[in-house]
Length: 22
Image 1 (cartoon, rainbow, N blue to C red):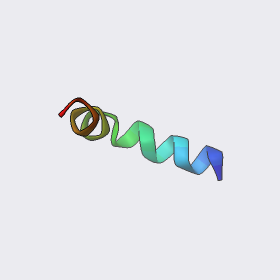
Image 2: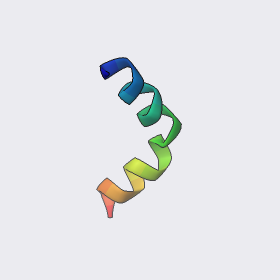
Image 3: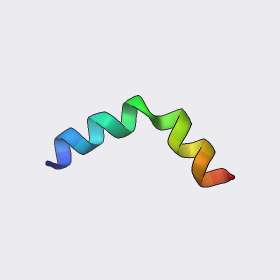
Image 4: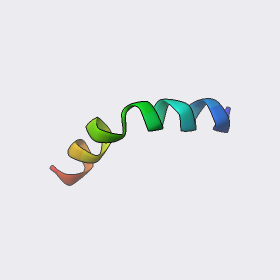
């Protein structure tokens, strides 16, 4: 589970950071 979540996070790093920074 952790490995799959890490892969998805790496793919949406820019989108996740933008949302967290907003």
